[in-house]
Length: 205
Image (cartoon, rainbow, N blue to C red; front, top):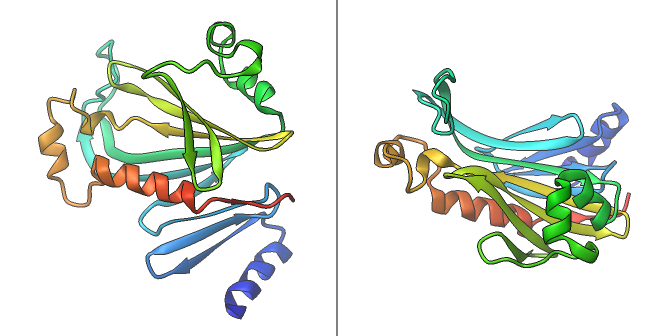
């Protein structure tokens, strides 16, 4: 435990904003600037992008883009079977929704600064200490889920979880892709995602 703590202090002293620790098959991510921390499986790759965190896993595979509706996109070189981003907005829930949604959404599904529940589209969503809403946004099996979790009056966590179209029922190659070595299957993808949220911790920076 002391070794882990010293490692984190060393990272902070070097002006890096976060530290990652490895314990068996799990890693821990901590960001001292945003105050967030969570655990994730070691096979998931974490990258810090401008303003957000990316969690991703994939296996090499040249295959057609299932979301290329025009038919002119180049072939994909990786089957991404897990992709999640996290971003903390310095706004309340209303400001965050306004920053991430179109005006038509605000009018139809966020009247009076509250989500309007809609079956198959918007629902209440809770995992661990995180309580908020899930918004499903996509077409023909392509898209993503957006999760809004207020952390404090002027801080909101937005989590974006991409659809894995290749492994969905609409994919004609689903069985072939599901049999590939190392692929994260849909039930495992959901389990990993939910576990990350259950382990999520926020401490006001």
